[in-house]
Length: 441
Image (cartoon, rainbow, N blue to C red; front, side):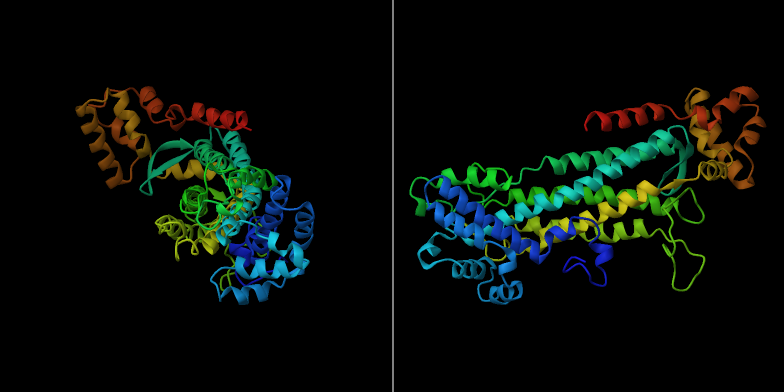
């Protein structure tokens, strides 16, 4: 177990690799990595002695620090960097202590550590999104022509294919992956108020080297008062969570007893109920939804924090720390849950066809109107036939054949009421989605 991830609810809300990258211990390690990289970057520029950079780097070992004690001392300053820097200096020879945190302010370390944490947490999250997308591509290809009822406002609409539904999932995950992968996560180094005055006229030389050392982006100017990088990260995670939540919603609805068109992977004890032995609950979809439903409020909190006061916010900035970690953890957990669901999803094509036939041809009514010329008179005729078919629980075909105004032969009417002939460009859209996902790898 990863420390901090062995709680009562952690296996639901902290699933996947992202969670381990945003624990308190991970934050501490990232802050120390920033301090070590800063010293190295400054030594390369001759701003601090090489011996100081080496000593600082050697001292930036998380195992040497008492996380609980630093957390306790954080309450005195409302910032964990202050006690961390003090503890780091205590581990250096007296003559080198002044080079620790040289020219930096606490926000530089916090913000850069946040970006570093995000980079590390995004790696497993992106892997899960890619795997989920690959699973969707497989489902779309295998079920390219599997007919099912399209549903709008929770009612049967017109025939679609399960391949088209999976293609929609695929493109949403693909876009989310691309959006997160393209994020520009910058280092922050601006000193007390963005001027780096302690370094004379050379402060601007440090961020590019610091960025290279940490594999982050180099900003044009210090962004301590501009929370756009954090907001962009939060919004990208929010959109990703929404995409994951849409898929989870579809899966839980398809898995309903009365629908039964798809089912999550099964395992002993999975989906069980404490009261009902027969239950097979869609625990993956449920867990993913539990994660993503917490995300919008967190995104809103980050956006609200963009209203900073002057050169450093008093409260809004501090509110970002745990919030961003929560966003990464919850979105990563949802991605992990959905990957498992999609990779093991079973599809019941026969049940899909049977459910479509429950409505006795009504979802094909639009196609009949088109066959009749699409005129207002054609619409009126088919509307009346649909109403009669529904009221009398008779097949739409039978009602239409009994009406001499229909004017279609049995063969023509059967063609109009054949779901497989009413799919339009569904197959083309599936092929495009699958091909696009392959091209962009």
